[in-house]
Image 1 (spheres, one colour):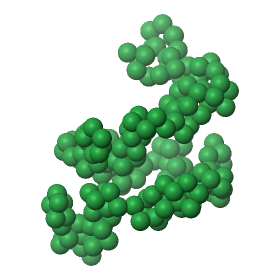
Image 2 (cartoon, rainbow, N blue to C red; image 1 turned 180 degrees about the vertical axis):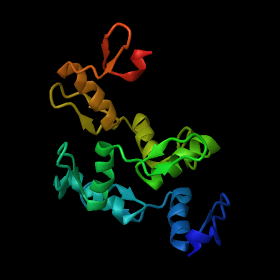
Image 3 (tube, helix red, strand yellow; image 1 turned 120 degrees about the vertical axis):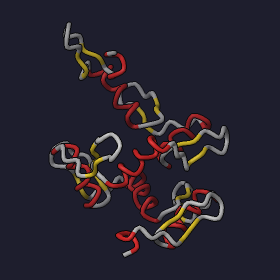
Image 4 (cartoon, rainbow, N blue to C red; image 1 turned 90 degrees about the vertical axis):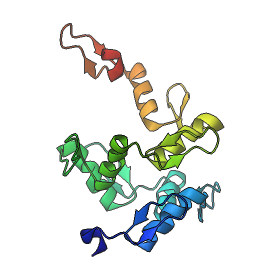
Length: 194
């Protein structure tokens, strides 16, 4: 009911952010304290949530029990697959009240809102740079550690993120998905079109 009424009785003693449920506050506090109580038995990597560990374990086991019939991408849970399918259908049921942009999930909308508010709740312990999401922080940390977990199957080059690998693969395949409307020239990356 607190979600519907907007009541947020649980607040962070470090940053003051308020939450409707105690479990939400506990999750947030792990970000502030750096606590990672869920550890991978294979590589030792720690996670704030058990669900994040479950997802991570799929990397080691190669098990993705739910796969997309359109593109073949695999997912740990059926709910993750359902959200992914919206990328194919174009469904964006969650809209930003500031700019009108639509999103697949409410969590994506909440993350997007931080661009408008300037909130950066995830900060790098090495350089202090702030991020709107934990996944952005984790990706950033790879620049400090040198970790490149996404490798090209053709040339072996490693990348910080899957999206970087995806862009790199276009150089091998010749795919140029971004085309100039005036001359028709194609580009690998959208920013090269500008």
